[in-house]
Amino acid sequence: MQYATNQYEGMIAETIVIPGHNGDPVGAYVARPLGPGPFPAIVVIHHMPGWDEWYREVTRKFAHHGYIAISPNLYHRAGHGIPEDIAVQVRAAGGVPDDQVVGDVAGALAYAVAQPTCTGKVAVFGTCSGARHAYLAACRAPGFAAIINCWGGRVTMEPQELSSNQPVAPVDYTKDLACPVLGIFGEEDSGPTPPQVALLEQALIAHGKTYEFHMYPDAGHGFFYYDRPAYRQAQAMAGWKQIWAFLAQYVG
Amino acid sequence: MCTMIATQIKVAGSGKAGNGWFTLGEANVSYDHPFEAPFEHALSLDFVNEALGPSARVSVELDVASARQLVDTINAILAKADSGGYIVE
Image (cartoon, rainbow over all chains, first blue to last red):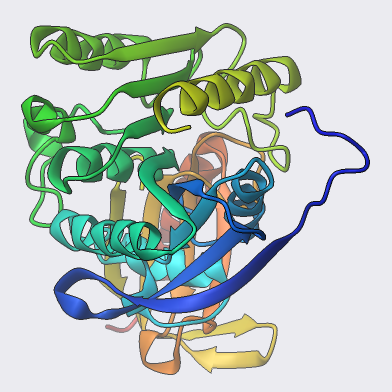
């Protein structure tokens, strides 16, 4: 993002509560640019480690780039405490149910488009399990203009991986996907592996969907996470560049 | 949840967290992304008491070799105690 040193800039970031699946109250972190806009929006879906500091930072990063960004707490119903304590509890319970996730993300989408400064165009972004959830929501919650799938694991699933909480592989909803897909992956990832990414790509091709995938060498799972050994500076910066270009093309 | 390889068992015992000792209720065993250990995946043991809230938790994250060695060591220690007549169940 190029900006002038003398331009006006500001944002507000805060936690709110929105109606989620079945109208349940769900916490959300919202960061939005100040000013009249209009601004496009993005729903930011947290990863397995929970609704944590990295996701707060990324939500503000999107706002810094001119998007109304909202990150719902998909683990809200598990109670409250430090994010990893909550994530451990959710993991032990078999993860959050897919239907519930779709309802919560739809609630975040509804919040975004209802903002008077929103253009009405909304993307959805997720990493790791958040990308799996983003893909599910993009297929099943109508209204998204673009999806960014960063190394989403278990988008393709083997039959033995299905469970009561995750009864359908997200890839099986691909025919219902109504927006373009950006995929960011690492060649050394063990979930999704390059062959699993290829399966997803085959489904997108088979259903005539618009997509672009970027597979980065010398990068594994979570290579954007600057606080983990998996961080790969050059690949992460290249990935972010693709994200901004993709959003500019499809969301504004 | 990127692997969703996790299970929970009931346990009896005590664990020590930041606020001191607490009565354990459950142990969560998983092979998934760790929060702290510098691996893509780890064998995680979370000793918790869900009735006391999410902060009642003692956690370790091990690499696979350490986890296997721990299992073998626990079994060896229990066998030794059993053979010595120390275990009454």
